[in-house]
Length: 439
Image 1 (cartoon, helix red, strand yellow):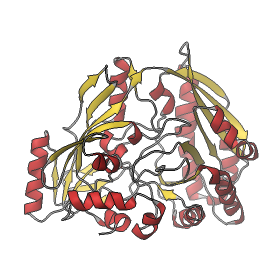
Image 2: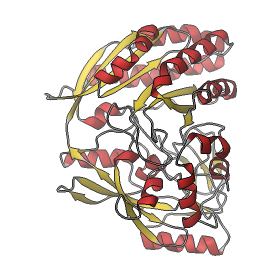
Image 3: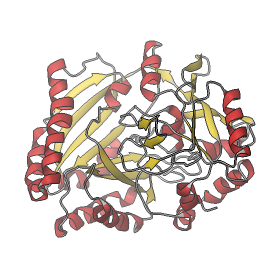
Image 4: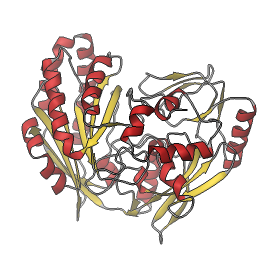
C-alpha cells in the first residue's frame, strides 16, 4: 500500500485512487529546521501547506493545491528509553519499519491496526486503530510528540507539557501543525495466539458481548448476502511461537485473501448479479486455524486488493442493533456487496477527536472494490450509523460536517480552540478541514 505520486506533473493520488491533488510545490525537508523554513516560505507566498504520508486515507485530508510536504527524509528512531519504556521516532517512519526495528530490540507496541504501511504521523493523525478490549488506538499509545506550528515554533507536548495541545494533537488531522516526531509507550515483545474461526452471523451477534469480554482482541467479518462470518481472537500466550506454515500461510493470506479475492471482486464488478454466489463461496473458503507469533505479525495482514472504505464508531452497546439494521438494509435492497463488513472494538480514551473519545466503541467498516460505484451503499450505511450517534473515521469516506461533529464530540470545542491559537491564519487548511472543523 503505497501512494501514487507523479513527480513530473506534481500530481498526487491516494492509495485507493479516489483523491487527486495538484500541489504548486512539493517539498521533502530533511530536518525540523528545513521544515520550519518551508512553512515560512509558504506563508510568505500565500500558499497552504499539507503533509502527506503514504496516502492510505480515503478522504482528502492531505490534499492541497499549495505546498505538499513529503516525509521521506524524516524517518528513523531517535531514541529508545528502556527505563521509561518509550520509543521516539521520526514522523515519516513507516509503521512497518518501526515494528521490525522494535522487534529486533525485543520490544513491541501494545496494539496496532491491521495494516502497517502508513507513516507514524499519518496513522496517528487520522486515528488509525485495531481492536482491543483494554488497549486502544495507535494514537492512545502516544506519550509525547513534537509539532512544528504555523509560526515555525517547534512545540514539544505531553501530558505534562502543553497538555491542551497534547490532548488535541495526538489525532490532529494535520490541522494544528506538522508532526515531526512521536514518542510511543512500548513493552517487552510478547506472543499472541490468533484463533480464526468461521461462525454464523446470528451466533456472533448473540454472543458479541461475551466474545469481546473474554478476549483481549476480538474482531469479525460478515459476508453480505450470506449468514456467514469469520472471527478472529487474539490473546497473549506463553508460547512457544508457532507461526503459520509457509505454504498454508501463503494459501490463506495471499492466494485466498488477495489473489482469488481480487479475481472474485473483478468478476463481481463486471457482473454484479454474480456477487451473492461469489460471497457464499468466499465465506466458506477460509478455514479455522490457530497460530502464535509476535504482535505485529498477528495484528497485521497484507492488503493488496484495492478498495474504498467508510467506517463509523458507534457506542459499543449499539453495535449489534446497528449491524442487524445494516444486514436488513442490504437484504431488502438491490445492492450487491462484494466486500465483507469488518467489526472491531476499542475502550474509551481521552483524546479530543478520537472516535472513542469518552466512550467504549465498536467500529463498523464497509468497503467496496475500487472502481465500483459506492455512493448508494455508503449513503445507506451512513444513515444507519448516524442514527446511533456514529462518529466517522477521519481518514475514511463520509459526508459529516462541523455541525454534526461538534454535537458528537463533547471536546470538539477544545480542539478548535487549540487550532485557533496555533494556526489562526489557517496555513494548514484545506477543503476537508473546512468541512469537518469549520473555519
